Image (cartoon, rainbow, N blue to C red; front, side, top):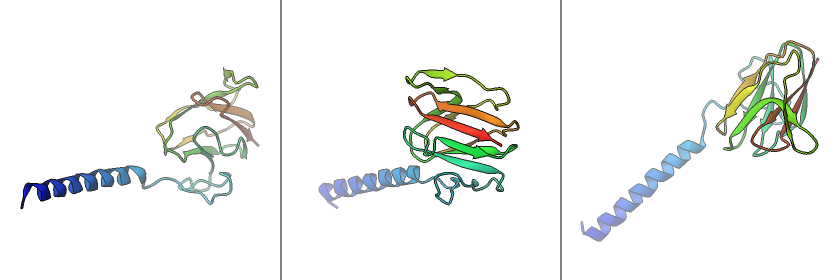
Length: 145
């Protein structure tokens, strides 16, 4: 085989290898799925005891959610964007206000992108707030009944 064909074959194999790696990185087996009604559905794999909220690149797809007392909340990062969720919220001026309401579970979760984490359980009725420390005005209000 001449050197030009060998070089072309090597380049083709390298491109296929890189493409395979990128394809494998984009698929995430085992990622929780929901029925797609705005993120307010029981999360897959939680036995119906939790509720799911999805995140976009810089927002929660719903800004408020009601859940029953004693349940967990599954937060699903639908995009390959990191998020850091903590107790608190952004005020009207976009200033972060870290705080933990009485009875709220401690929330301190790092998302690498395209992953899922549970927070809770929420054992106390009330209104609780979590926010993303990376994305300004990315607030979620959780009402526990």
